Image 1 (cartoon, one colour):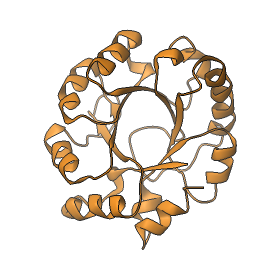
Image 2: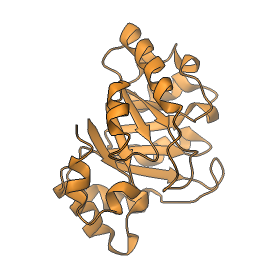
Image 3: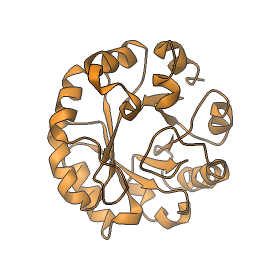
Length: 213
């Protein structure tokens, strides 16, 4: 299991140290939540801050766009060369075109499904994706309770991926901890985003390792 701590839960007053701590602690990716205050009721960070994060991080960036006008934000963040850029299906009118645009930058494209959205809704995109992110909380804020129905949803998605594009990863974001990690792994999940679980721990490295099962 790969672990992508979300810096949304970090102490931004000492962000430099917080980024170094999760990278030194053995994380696989650094998850960056970009929110515009329109698609979700929260406003987070832009490319100036993420550029600073990219300079500090020794692990690849996993940028999660929770925004309107996805194409505009892809152009903003692509120069930072993250490993992944993910966008929400619920907001995008032309997802295949955007997937091609992300890939044209040399970045791996990923699609995000909110808790109410079905894996079947992206069946015809899976062949062109490197990852699908399933939200296990409602997007916008950290520290929310895990929504249990993401587990059968992940199993259904895994069936589709196995048939269409076995190299595509499944990522889950929201309420992940050491109590539900085994269930997620058994459902076929490859990557988990953990914010408050990692940054709320006394030892970030130990918290990360407890999820890398």
